[in-house]
Image 1 (spheres, rainbow, N blue to C red):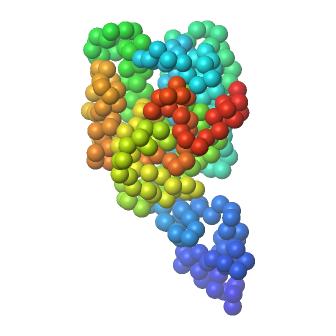
Image 2: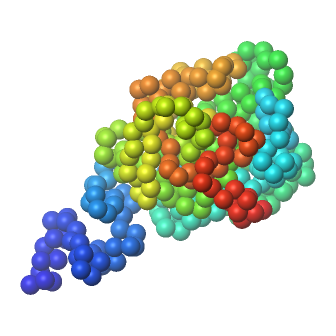
Image 3: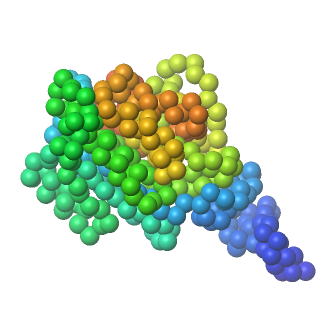
Length: 322
């Protein structure tokens, strides 16, 4: 009778929880194992199952890399006070590890990565090229000339380059036929589970609310410096909070990139205050979430309000990706 009941439950799409044995007979798994199935269902105890209606099929990751400028627009040192190439290298290395982890669990998920390089010296570029050899990653040079007449004149060349690389990354995302676009700056260290957690949480939360969303992988300290209201959501393996500000590292859908293209474009035409002014305006109408606790660490100066996420072993994450 038990076997028949299990078969019937499976037939009608139900899962059975045996709390006595701490297992699921229908899933044939212990309850402390991964219960969710990508593109099909998200299961979080004790909240039950969410049917996935918003499936993720492909991801384009666009990394903006500058291995020379220490901290753009600031005269400060980053945590650990190393040359910028060290941050770029470890950032990309951590991203590769996260991609490999995600791809190992979901081999049918298409992941493509593009690095937009802003005038790296030959030695730095060779070091990055060696790191990505054999991976589905290509390096494209930043096309400064293309944006000379589009971007307003800036006080210094670094600001123009930053706006140009952002513009080029947005254009690539708009023109590529991918489902999700992940815009990444080269001074973030990522936990191995970052991409897998983002994919699963994107599917779960988007399916629940019936719309595409934005995801920021970092839990910034500024979020705790004011009495700002937020909503807490359940993702795949952690809580997420709604936010109304991000930097330029975030994931969203191709649909939302097209929908708000005018704001993405305006972000790149001049140095605004704040820099992400028009991106942040999108969050007045769309949901953006960041993780609790952080999945990526922004390696800026230790006093930056947009820098180090709380409750992270910074040194361990830094050393792991050397």
